[in-house]
Length: 529
Image 1 (tube, rainbow, N blue to C red):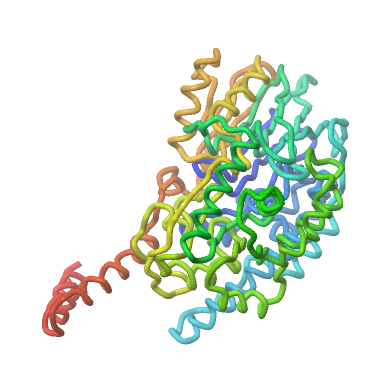
Image 2 (image 1 turned 90 degrees about the vertical axis):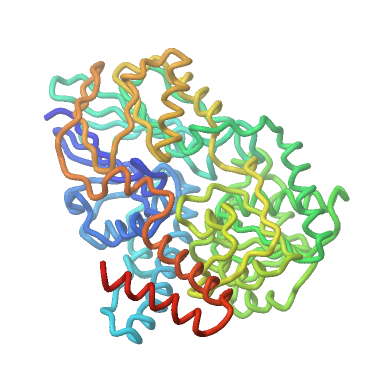
């Protein structure tokens, strides 16, 4: 049989990375990630896999982020028994990240089921539990960078540093074809930027048959800034936030962003560039991840002093729920970093409930916000949002710095692809919104890539691959049409916004009679539809 590549995630959307490769001697996955974003997209996490998990031989994992690894426990739960191959730092991070993900899902479902019982609705189950995640970790196998391995018959793979987070990799794969000629594929994983505190710029591999490349920032160039300039921008935001008289709240991804921000903030204090302040890392996962970073500090560009930074007396790790809630009593002069980075779960949500309505507070975003997430709605300027079922007006100062992103921007992605040329069969753009992928395809034409060889696969799209030949699209079903996967907001977001708008409108009317009249008009419209 020819080599078959199917995009079961991060196609027409940014999250849920999952590629299935099938060949004469078996089948394997590259990543198996959780979908994030609108509720329509997130519901894919609860459905059946579009393939049979017991038939998957192994997983090649690019890195530990949940949108790349977050469905691995579900995969095992439904019959996958093979190894999960990743770098040692990635596996060390997974030991905390996957159980944490399971715990969050159990907690979210428990709260949801309390409401479902009250409303007489059916109860739901978590995608997987903390225990499921712990069992999944028993299947992990460590590999080294830059060394060929043979994970299964007919396949060779080599991991290369992707510069995205600790342990992240692009994966070069050779898969045997019917005629004995291997098909060479390169999966970029998530690519890091050129300028970062802990990593060097990633490089591609030339002469591949097919390159599968992320395009999260394929439509935008960040201003070229050095590490020093980025530090200066953060210092300015911190000074302004503390001068405003409130706290600075940073929704931070638990892995890499939290560690880099803490490192930079404490370095700025030591240099006298920002005022002395108490810094709180309010995320048990980020605390555990920091321990992994300290353990692997010798593999990081600026990692030698990490153990000293994390022991700084100005830094407090708040691990218990009680310690986290106690931070609500601090109304000024503190810097609080809390996960999750897109404000979709975790402790950041209760901090937002206590800070968004305060004009003196500042919320600083430092990473990508997927469409439909609470973080994206706040950053987009919504006057009020729903947090844990409650309406919260947004009066806080909302700020953003994209220079701390862990993703390469357009020009950096272009340089990475250029280092892969020539590509014999074609490129697949994934892990991006449709506009970003379309813009990036146009950019690639500027470095000599034939646009007809650049493909933007839909969710669950499958292609037959042969060495040195263009890919052939195969017929097959999709769990979600491209337009639904790419929507910046779905009907759930529209419904929440309508409820907020209706509440404001009712409160703004002069008397109860006017309020009743408006509600009656709405009732007539509902009855007529």
